[in-house]
Length: 248
Length: 218
Image (cartoon, rainbow over all chains, first blue to last red; front, top):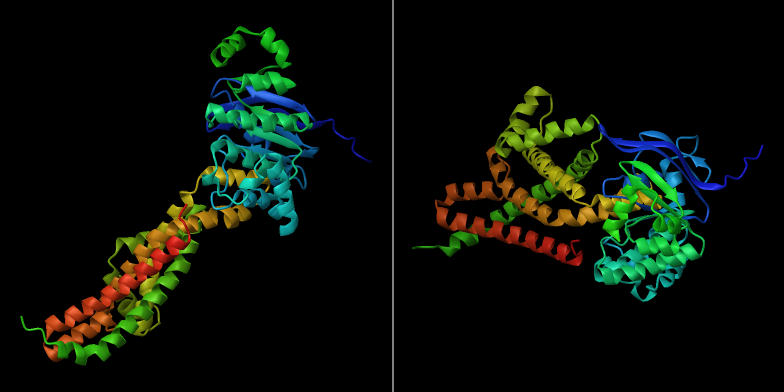
């Protein structure tokens, strides 16, 4: 019997994570449909980043289940690696490989994960570098690039393995304000092309402009989950209103 | 001061032989030490269960005892404990390899641990396997960071080989001792021996500098 195509790219239920005795995430039920752009906000320590890291199993889950693109973590034939192959991740600190040029950074995934030939991987890399506006910088090492450029290379690198979902962990928090725009623009273009995205950020304007869904987390739980326009116009709780007051 | 150059001249062939022996022992010692140290360093850095305790004991024993004692033990005590008799040369090379290996273990462990965890995350997030992350990312970066401390260790090992005169290996220092006894000219002989060591350590330092420069430490 054929399995019905799941309408959700990501689905987790009762997901929990504790570091030692400290619970960081509790009872997270979250489903993300293909093409959805979800912005996750919340005070620091609310578990936003940990949630993203659980979704591609950089942090092993303590409890609950996780399904990405129909693959259930822990099921036969589904390793953490199989899930990571379907999810791209962009980090706050860029984490570009410092001994590789921009092009080599982007080529590594296609080469090692998708088994592409050097020639094909190079073509993939150049196409993506062009897309983030950095083809002219392909031969440069990360340290020769600005923060904004590094983050755009990091986005190209994550896209190069053809992920179904992109996870962004505070992608602009380490950038000077004048460099944030170029990164947000790349993200907005991605969203417009229909990429499924989960974004932890403090950029409320980006949330307003590009997000279909806004999730508010506090103390390791999802407190609100709704449409951003509605939530901004009419904050559903005093706690959220207070939070907005701090970040806006 | 009466420095008689002809003494140095006459002693030269023997000192060159001694220097050659010193270089052979040093090369075998640091070569073996690199193999041992790389292996043990990775075992320690990645906390491979059980064997990391064996490595810990090994490093502790070597770091906790003088190298003279180690040489004496391998050359004189080992044949009594287990039925193996090593030539002076073999004992010296083995001793130096074991000794350098312990220190290189720490160099490799430190270099691996100094690599930003975020880079491992980035590699894993791409879908690379853990061995691939080590081969493509952590390994090359850590390797670059071992170069300066390795150079230091190589020079220490070269100089440490001098104490194998206690087990009668005809390396440079032992030749120096013999030549002094034969000629009674301590000033000339030990000056020449010192110059020989300086030339060797300086060359080694230059080689490491060159490697370092060609490889921009990141």
